[in-house]
Image 1 (cartoon, one colour):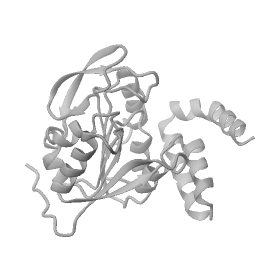
Image 2: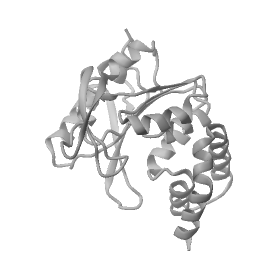
Image 3: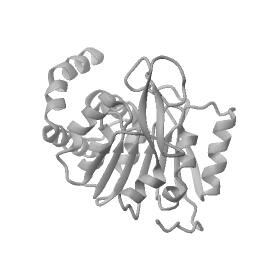
Image 4: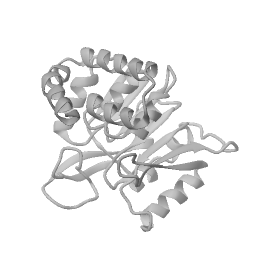
Amino acid sequence: MERQFLSIYRKLFGSILERTPLLKLLYFKILLMAFRLLNLSNLIKTRLISGLLGISEPPVFAIFNRLPKGSVVIDVGAYIGYYSLLSIAKKASEVIAIEPNPKNYERLLNHIKRFPNSIAVNAAVSDESGVAKLYLGPTEVTHSIINKSGVAIEVACIALDELIRKFGVKKVDLIKIDVEGAELKVLKGAEKSLGIAKQVVIDMHFSPNSVEYQEIIALLNRKGFTIKQLEDPLTKEIRYFYCIPMKDRKPTKPT
C-alpha cells in the first residue's frame, strides 16, 4: 500500500514539480519543516525522504539538512539537482552544481537557474581539466568516467581546484561527491578545495578491500580529515564517508 501511494503521488505531482522549480523549492521547504516538527522513527523518515523528496540517501540528506544559513556548497555529481535545491532551501549563500551528462544537466539547470546564488556546470570532475569520455550507464544515475562499459560520449572535464579558482570561492562548507567510481580522481584534483572545506561527504563505489578505498582514506587523512563511515539504513552496508577536519588542521588559503 505504501509503495502504491508513493508511486501514485510521484506520477501526479512529479511532472508538475519538475516544470516549476519555484514550486519545488517551496515543496522542499514545507517537507523540511514537517520533518522537524513531527516525531518520526528513523525508518519512517527514511521512507518519506526517499518517496516524497526523491532522495534515496538518508545519511546524506541528514548532513545537508544540518547546513546553516549562508553555507557554500559544491555538489559534485549533482544529477538533476536534488541536493542543490535542498541547499537552496536551507538558504545557502552559494551553490555550485556539477553534472557531466547533458540530459541530466538540462534538468539540473532548469531546477536551479532561477536562483541567483546557484551555478550549474556541465562537466565531469577529475584530477585534471580537459576532455573525458563519459560512459553511459543503464540508468541516468550510473554514468561514469571510470566504469568503461556501454556507449561513451565526450564531455568537458575540470579539476575541483580549477573550479574554485574560476568562481573565486574562498570558503566551502560542504562538498558532496557522487561520481560512480571517480572519487579518487576527484580528490586528487582537489588539494586546495579540501584545504578550505569544512565537511566532505562521499558516496563510495569501492570495496573496503580495494586499493582505491585505502588510497582515499590515506589522502583524506593526509589532508587533515577525520572519517566517519556511514551505512545505508536499508542495506546496512557501509556506503558513505563523512569527513570533517581534525582540530589541529591548518586551513589552506585559496589562490
